[in-house]
Length: 298
Image (tube, rainbow, N blue to C red):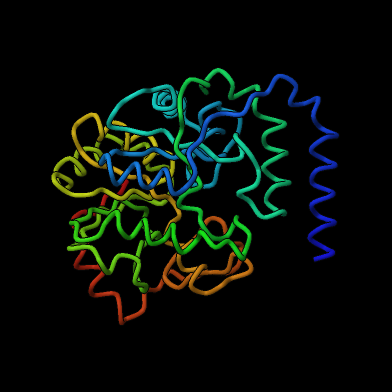
């Protein structure tokens, strides 16, 4: 408790010391996690999630591990971020409204990002739009460990795909739901496997495959900034596409009650520095392989 109070004191001391950097900043309207998921379920809308990596690619101000800078991608990310559609919801990080969602250690990082980037992002964000919460699928690691809402958010996500045929669009080593029960209540699972890095270079090929295999299905997407753009484009074609990002690793860490970002069997995660193995357990490999309807490679 004493350490937590010290951290809180330090965070707010830094918050007020750096207020000059945020002079003129006005928080944006952002739904909470539950409201975001409920809107997706009740209105059958698609969502695109913007995180710090997407913002860096959008503003062409930095590199990210899974995607090289690409001017066309930057243009497309700006287009989607500024879009308005009844079939689609743009989601941004909740720290653009407030910091209370996060555990203390993460608040420092968010504050620093906001201080250094809000003026760069200002032309692409709107105060007359109510955003979804991009952290909805980040329900465990960045939140306080005793967050009582975590299980409720997980159950809402499971309600989203309950009794539905789903198509998962993911990177080569993402393997959503493999080895856990995250999707046990859906009707069926198919997968399109894409390169783990620089997938945007194959955008048209991937998009056409999703059009072919995703009709009348709930499309769950874990493909970085490519998914951010594609969820919107699919929504305009009448498809239901939900960018869920790192939901699988958050769920596994939740089950493990992990205190650090540890490796997950059968995955290679860009947020984990430890040695990782991509080998899938024999217990799950046949079901995984049989779910793949298309593998897209360079």
